[in-house]
Length: 523
Image (cartoon, rainbow, N blue to C red; front, top):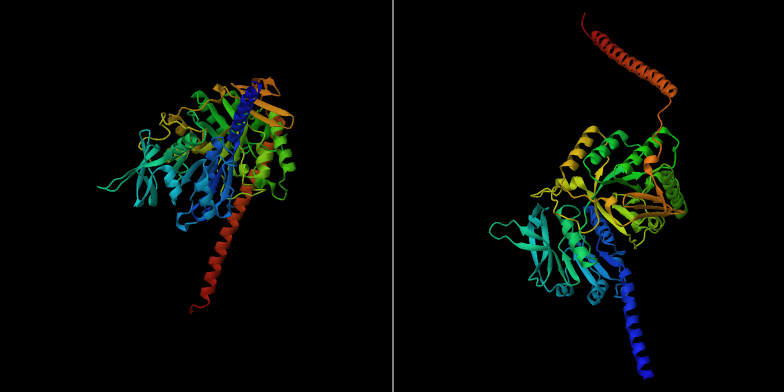
């Protein structure tokens, strides 16, 4: 009897031991393999977009160029899925080792672009077709968008038992084709191309969410980007007041500095950020612009000190960032990512600039509690759709998505931004109504934002008690006014002097020319 009980216990333990690794497998990264950056056609923008969307789905990613793939890298115990991105169709690049390993791989597979292989078609239970030189439209949720002209595109034929994400229609008169855009069959999926904005983003988000981590519908977050101490704070205040009056929740990506923090302009900047917090807005601290480090080494120690100092300066001024705002390349860097981003539970993932310095680039990216895929509200407005994407309130985003507006620099830009936001009918995300907390941990400081309340090291902060910015002293204003008058008159005097001198030169040249020609005239 005891032997039987022992056998039963061992059996239970063996079953549990089998299931333990499966739970750990949830933390396995996804392997993203792309054939080329295709810089000439700005192909790096697509790689950046795919990386950001996978991160928004809560995934760790390892990114590898096809020619650098080594045999045996892709295996079930190391990766939960693989994404193949064909970024340069004409080159027809291949790697036999990758093709062989992917065919054996039993995890989740997504193919983006052409060059579908036989094993991939088998997993999708479909055949391959081709269309050449077509104008296409993409339809989803009752909205249709005209997309750029397509020279050549592979599509799936006879797809049975699949989930479809969006519909493509050709515009051939008398020979119109209706094709699926995104297709998922079990753990295999296909997208014929990748768009970085417009209606396609919604289809791509739905497919990726269903394929890897099922998410509920997510409302877009409105973000004011490019806010710095040198921004026109009058325009910022007016924009914030307008959003507050219209009951629109929002976030701000704000840059901080370490120098000149005792100046009146800096105190005024911090005051504007505090007013944002009081008017249902939240702050994301923008990571430093690396170009400002000219002549200074960018290493873990310097970066940690800079980030810590900037965060503490904001907290001392009554400003409590709820996360970080960062270009995507920071999350693909061993120093910038691990040192600069690890302090935040949620981030705004901005598109990469065309050029940027690389510190210690790595293949691996991090995962976050919440990472937003950021795209432009202006681009959404410009999409050629039957219903404006900014007015389609039934069009939900499956992954965390932020729609950004640039900080206006002129009064006309301010009017355009206000009009664009007021005309939109999107159901905006309201961070103050969330159940989940947003956290920032740096050095010995823990910032937390929960249900509209700010905490520092567990202590609730009352931001309405912070002192308003002090006005300048009157005597200083008089001195500055007198100096400005002197400089103003000096400038006018120099302008008049230069104009008189130029007129004198013109008269002398005219007179000299006349005297010269008189020498050759017969008398």
